[in-house]
Picture 1 (cartoon, rainbow, N blue to C red):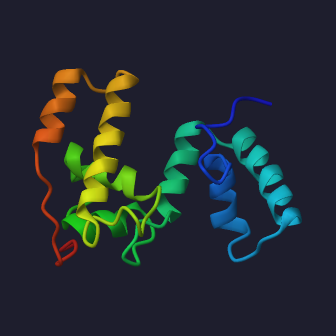
Picture 2: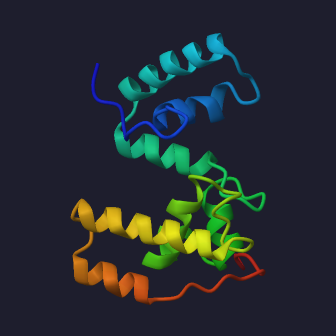
Length: 151
């Protein structure tokens, strides 16, 4: 059946289950809904590549401040398109999606910074960044904007 993406989060759901919840069972709860999410997650895993699942999730996930989807969050927080994000900005968004209210970079900058540090640490741990690159990323500061994207 294949390996599911990621490790269970505190709620015990995989990325596929979270995507299934966001796409198909939003606003519903209960044991039968959770079972439905597992079945849908398996179907997603069989039907799409891991990269496609991650992209779909990023397009519908909640990033705080009423930003749903990566583009809305990227434009809303940083005034830039996702493809133009700096490493620190991308790390903040990867971190904030975990707990959008708790790790909100506007209302809880210390929590957001801690999550950014965690994300960069994971990128170093899995070899996507070297330790030197990780230190450089963490040495850069992010600038939040209120203007959004211009295009």
